[in-house]
Image 1 (cartoon, rainbow, N blue to C red):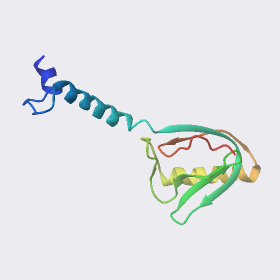
Image 2: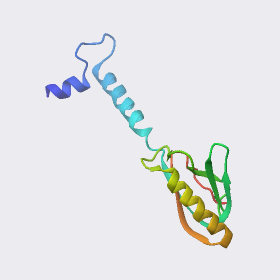
Image 3: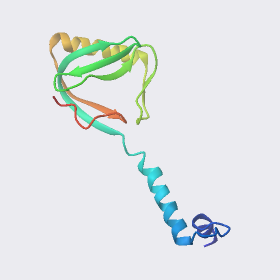
Image 4: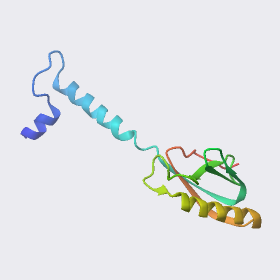
Length: 127
């Protein structure tokens, strides 16, 4: 009981603030802190490779024919990480993906299901 009291009730009385009001503000603060991490999302796209782009910062962009916008997928010169995920893509993996995407574009191959995830994933990328 002493531990619970020390967490939810201040050690000294704060003049003008009652315990219920203080506890309510702590609960609201906890809710706000933990709800801010729920924005990462995943979206699934299908189709053929419409465009592949290499930008000046050595970032690779991909647009499938079912997407309304191109997205950055990796970097050919540095390790790539997506905000909201815990994995990283090496430059070697990026170069392999670029090679496969160029082959898929040249042969007009169907990519099947491609997943994009992270904090910046839009609600929809369908044209």
